[in-house]
Each structure stands twice: as C-alpha cells, then as structure tokens.
Image (cartoon, rainbow, N blue to C red):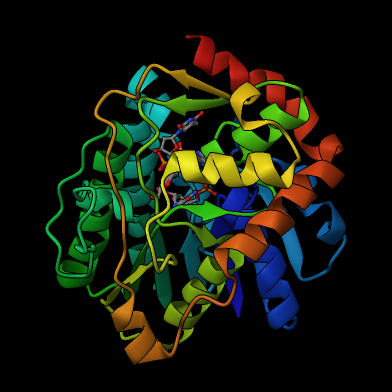
Length: 332
Ligand code: NAD
Ligand code: DAU
C-alpha cells in the first residue's frame, strides 16, 4: 500500500513513520510536510535512505501540490496541523488556515482521486474540559465543546471529515487522542519543556496552581491505535484513545521528573501566569477501541516517563538547537 502521511516531520507523525515502516516494511510512505517551526527532518534521519520512504516539502493548504501528491497514493493518514494551544492564543488565524482549510483541501483531493482510506488524527481537546475530582471521562458520544482556538479548529476539521463521509462517501476514520509523550516532541510542549529546562539548569514553569490533569499516553501506543483503526475499523467510525488509569496533575508530573533527574523540588519549580481558558481536566474512556479492536495501552506511565527523560538526556543534539526558538514564544 502507498500511504501519504501529512505532517510526518512532527512529533507524532515521525514516531508513526518509524513504527509503520518497521511493522509494514513492504508499504511505501510519502511524508508531505511544510517543515514549519514544528517539523524536524532530523527525527527521520535513520530512515532517510529507506527506498520505501520519501519526503516532499509541501503545504496542505496548497491545492495544486496536494492534488499532485494525492494522485500518487492509495490512502492518507493526516497528522499535519498547528498543534500548540499557547500559540493558538497568540496567533489564532494560522490554526484556522492549516487545521480547517488544509483538512478540507485534503478531503477534496481524496474525493477527486478516489482515495481508499482517509484517517484523521484528532484530539480529545474537541470535547472541552472535565471537572476535577470526578470520574467522568470523554467518550465517542461526548458533545463537542472546544475552548481554545486550537481545539475549535480541530473540532471543525472533525466535522468536515464526517461531512465528506456522509455527503460524498469518502472512506474515513477518526481518532480523538489524549496528550502524547515520548521522543522527538518539540520542547515547546509541557513534558519536553520541563525536561529540557531542568537539563539546562532552569526551573519547570507550572501554569496557575498546577492542578490541571492530562491523560498521558506514550506516542507508540497512539501509533498502534491509529494502525488498528486505519486497518480494521468500519468506515465512518470514530475512536477515543487515552492511557491513564488514575489522575495525575501537572504538578505531580513535574515532581516525578524532578525526582528522576535527582533535582531538589523546592529549587526546581516556578509557578507562572496561567493559560487563558485553561482546560482543567482531560480523561478519556477507551472502552470502544478496546472492545472493537482489542487495543489497550502497553506502555505504563512511570516506566515510559523514565525512558522519555533518558531519551532527552541522551539526545541533547536533537533538542538543543530548538530550545531557544521554543522559549521565545513564552516571552510574548
Ligand atoms: P507537531 O506540531 O509536532 O507536528 C505538526 C507537523 O505538521 C509538523 O511537522 C509541521 O511542519 C507540519 N505542518 C504544519 N502545517 C503544515 C502545513 N500547512 N502543511 C504541511 N505540513 C504542515 O504536532 P503533533 O504533536 O505531532 O500532532 C500531530 C497531530 O496529532 C495533530 O493533528 C494534532 O492535533 C494531533 N494530536 C496531537 C496530540 C499530542 O499530544 N501532541 C494528541 C492528540 C492529537
Ligand atoms: O489533549 C491532547 C492535546 O495535548 C493535543 O491535541 C495538543 O496538540 C497537545 O499540544 C496537547 O495539548 P495541551 O495544551 O494539553 O499540552 P501542553 O503540553 O501545552 O500542556 C500540558 C499541560 O501543562 C497543560 O495543562 C498546560 C500545562 N503547561 C504547559 C506548558 C507548556 C504548564 O504548566 N507549563 C508549561 O510550560
């Protein structure tokens, strides 16, 4: 099968390409990525000469370039997006352009060239926020209630994907996944920002009171969920994907990382101004994907957090050149 992966130079896309080529060595992957600030070809260095992999620099909002590449493939797995909530507060319009218009341009091309499968990689943030100290979780029936411009743009893209299925009969699937962590994540995001701050002798910046909860999932568990849905799910279906079995708030995650790096807690945490419209708690009920497709997380949080910390310790050459740029947005 010849698969177009959009956004394959980003965090999840690059991990997914490594995963896929290892599991499906006879398939061919074309990585179509604009290489924005978030795209790093260094993450794909080890496979750049693999004859089953190729890279095209291109923009999903450029219909001509999209048509050209989509005409060559059987299926699309769509990761490309503006993905950082804080950036969507500073500069929301690019989120509308990339995440909504870009997705629609891909869907138009999928319609035009009779693409067999279109998998859309989405987020649990489309559902909004849950209260603290509750057992409630998002599931496939939860109403959409996005709060940030990022979440609203992803919600719109989900609606477009479903509309193209219902109206034009495009074969689509969607996954709404929780917060990923693992190697090759840009140091702008909480987990790598915290680790690389500590490795650079700086403090962890904790927003507000730190009692915000995210449902952490290792990126390879997400890759496997996408694989299962893409290969085996019914067309038109949606699956929620998440990992944690109990709530761990941001402050507790920070305390775990500080301990792993042997630092002193009192000297390593700085509470900073909160994010506007900050969602309190995310938690995902992944019963449906478990029952229908047999997926469950394989990587437990504490051991894979430790491996992730170790990866950043050992791969300074990957994150160091990105650090100054990623910190510059926080100065705004
Ligand atoms: P990322 O920001 O690390 O990577 C995004 C990639 O898209 C980059 O390589 C960038 O160059 C590329 N890109 C951006 N605009 C483009 C354009 N116009 N044309 C072509 N390429 C473009 O993002 P990520 O964290 O890897 O997230 C990937 C996808 O997964 C996104 O759709 C995101 O909404 C979704 N998601 C992310 C998480 C998470 O925890 N990171 C969780 C659930 C869902
Ligand atoms: O839930 C899935 C989503 O997870 C994805 O759709 C997004 O693409 C991804 O960026 C992520 O969104 P979050 O806003 O949850 O992730 P972020 O890493 O930015 O922040 C995680 C939590 O940590 C959040 O409560 C804000 C907080 N935070 C973040 C940063 C960068 C801090 O306390 N300090 C920080 O320095």
